[in-house]
Image 1: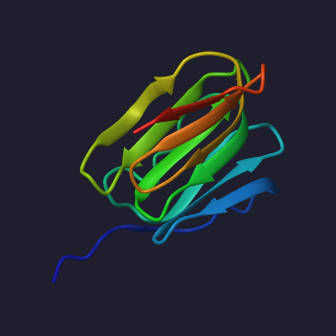
Image 2: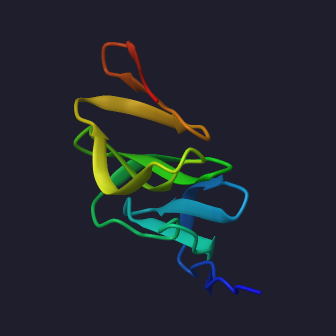
Length: 116
């Protein structure tokens, strides 16, 4: 039996939360990312930066919108694509949602961008 590392939830106050099947990620009042749960494929990675919105999938992927508007993703999608803290979308986005094998974001002009 293979045991995976289990990371505990933070004690800092949180303002936004998004849960996947094994991992939960949240933003604190300063825009920092906090992730906990089973660390599968880097799913509990906590990128540096200031974020304004976060979304986790039932796979092991999470994406967040930075205060600059870029979308950053980490973890792994069900099709095996990994996102090790790489920008998947550069621009001025206001919201992101992530599924098992796709990322969808809305930019400041209210246009939808789909990747996956």
